[in-house]
Image (cartoon, rainbow, N blue to C red; front, side, top):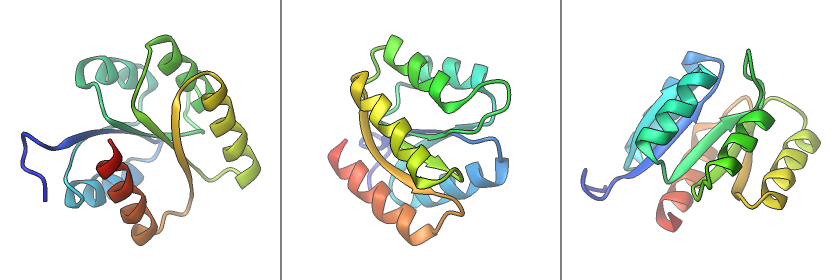
Length: 131
């Protein structure tokens, strides 16, 4: 496991606090330093202060949406790997991923809900090692 000085930073936004907690639990065991939020305004503030290496982004966020947050990341010059996590159909997730790629973001993968801890762990391990 990574030491605190080596820990990669992960930022998670999801509208469900229990999903944030699950992702944080798995990610911390993978060696990430994790911040989570359910609020798109807080997401922007945390992003600017925390400068994550990896971002897990839900597409369905009240008072915003994942596409709006992708635009924000583009405007910020984000270099983090971005993982789309959503209950939307795979085609919608892939379209969001392609949009991010076209706009210059480092889109990593898509992860369907409901989450499977083993799949999440495998993706996070790969992203941690690549970040």
